[in-house]
Amino acid sequence: MEWKQKFLERYEELTDIDSFIECSSRPLRKSIRVNTLKTGVKEIKSRFKDYNLKQVPWCKEGFWLKGEAIGNTLEHFLGYIYIQEAASMIPPLVLAPKEDVILDMCASPGSKTTQMAALMKNKGLIIANDINILRLKPLSINLQRCGVLNTVMTKMEGRFFKDKFDKILVDAPCSGMGAIRKSPNTPLMWNPNTIKRMAGIQRQLLSTAFDILKENGTLVYSTCTLEPDENEGVINFLLNKYENAKLEKINLEIKRSPAILEFEGNVYDDEVKKCLRIWPQDNDTEGFFVAKIVKIDL
Image 1: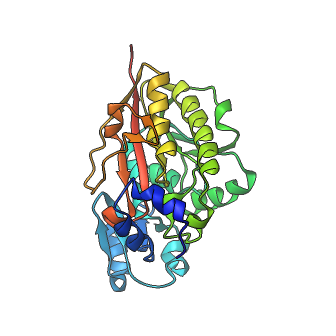
Image 2: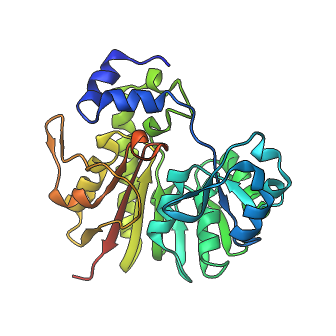
């Protein structure tokens, strides 16, 4: 894997660069989530005996496995399993949807939407939104394959939503620096200007989401990037903009790294410590960032 020198210099300030490079240079472990709308963990364990299933500690329906052509199995076609990266399973668990009215603002291809539907047992309502008509196709296919019945798809810019929601997931478009193991060319595409542009979009999406969140509602913001500007910086922006935005600590059985509180002259609110920052080397997964925000009643 090739790395830009400026990229390495930047990340040297953020983490143990040798561990990061070593882990990021290895292939990503394959993982699946059992779709409990159609089957159970016990059944899949029985069907996948030869795949050496290993439990994902933070998700009881999640498993790492070894084997080829998982996407060609009957269980995948029938929607019994969803091929999903283990760190990607975190945001729906943090949001903890029940019989709520949920907005999944950036839903495609539907890994987290289908996971939320399963957690809700097909009750309540999910509005699964995406801005691109082409991205709605895989979303639609995955919702149908997984037997999701409580979800309506919409195509619009997140900033145009006006209705109020009990809970909102903003799995934001990002620079993808945490997904290097899936996309080895990502470090070569790294560009500070792209980071700034993405952070602007993320601030807009998060502000809109908070505006349309009901009082005492929960908002989860997540990215698969490792850039402070797109993670802690965006959350710091929200805390400064809204007096009634409060962070909650994320309690999951997972190894985590400290949130970045100061970077390139920017100093972030101490509350940002409550965010979940995961480097690839922490749990042998993708890099991921998750924040749980509550809208308090002032």
